[in-house]
Image 1 (cartoon, each protein chain N blue to C red):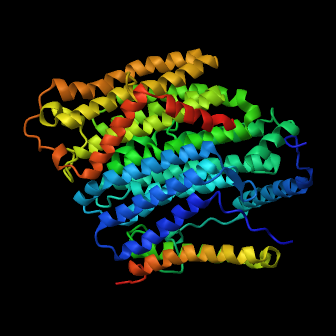
Image 2 (cartoon, one colour):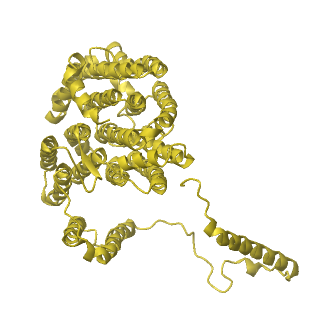
Image 3 (tube, rainbow over the protein chains, first blue to last red):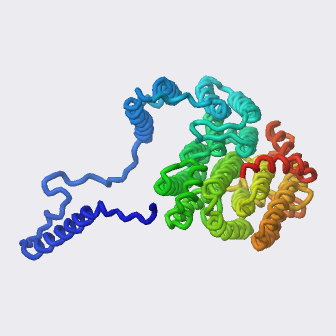
Length: 123
Length: 483
């Protein structure tokens, strides 16, 4: 009966979740009581053994990076789609080839457009 | 197991439009005169309209996509509004040095998305069409790249639109989790067969849909984006956005609520009645204090979504047909009003364009645009013999017959309030003097032919439907028979 479903199979997961949280809390509390406390300023620097940070982390990027990132995502997603296609290919047959070529040709239009608009040109 | 090739005839209009738009994108790279691009896109839309007309009813892609009179009716609205938006765009973009061919491709793709939405018989197809439509309009809203307002508009629209898409997906996933299916008609039978009607999770899914579609049609309380987005977007895009995506939202809403969630009608009417009343209240009351014509029309567009919701609330075939009727009338009068705003546009003049005060004394300086604006304002108010009156009349009549007299009373009450801000424009035009030191707006004689065509078509349609609504009514009635 949908709606009244209680996931009994997942009870161990719940138990281990509770045990794990309690374990973490107990360990931290014990550590808090037992450990030595000797603060000095160097301990507060971001990287005790590295370089101090230079400038603010939020500064403006060149918009070109975003264009490259966008193009990357488009073609990245294309390959993601190619994987399940390749796995199911022998079950779908000719239809799969046609579909995939349609898909790739739509992407190709975008590729040609980006190329002609010089999106790949860094200068 | 071998897959059969799906029957491609029902998707012919959409396939043609998408392929045409993609080809246009490539061809445009070597076209210098952007008027040619606009012309090609108009031809593409016309051919698409013809294919919509000649495509027989049918279902394809395993029931995910269905063509019927209902979807065709909406497709005509989309194609019409896209064509009119393209016609009024040229000069507006040229004056801002933003006349690019991509603009027309994006309008075509957005139209294709709406057409897919209207034909969608599966929740996944709905999402697909919705995203195609929305992503294109996000870009269109920010098309005047140098203008901060336009950027603001695109960013707000994108962020909130993505948020509402998430609601839609959550609703779809809940439905799928409960029934194991996303096909609209099968969802309906799964709900009634397995006794899910009282399931609270199903009600959650219903609420998710209300939020997502409420956002798309700009119904209160999900309307917050509309004024800022409509004000910042290029005016032709605003005209397009306030008509096309709204109609597409209603097309999908009716299908989801009346087909898939048919057995929950009592629930969704309970949710939609307050939303409709609130939408009419918010739209009409806040519009009273607007000083910018685009913002005023944005709030008016919210209010009109409220009126159209009444048709959906009745849940009858007649009510839906009144809603469809109203949406096409709204398309004509709203695009007409926006065309006047575009005619009075002064190019890139900071903070002076689109002010309501620009209409002061317009009847003396520009009698023809003033008279046309008068017609559109009368129609938006719902004064006979304009189409707006007929649209409202049939909406209200059907709602009263279905027993929603109190909703109609509220609607009439807010219509009366709306007369104040619509007729204020008329008062500015006819009873006040032009402001001193104003840069004179372009007059009708220097307006491009394309805008004149749109104005002629919209004004004629508004008057014609106002005196002779029978043909349109019969068409809408036939189209709504599937419910």
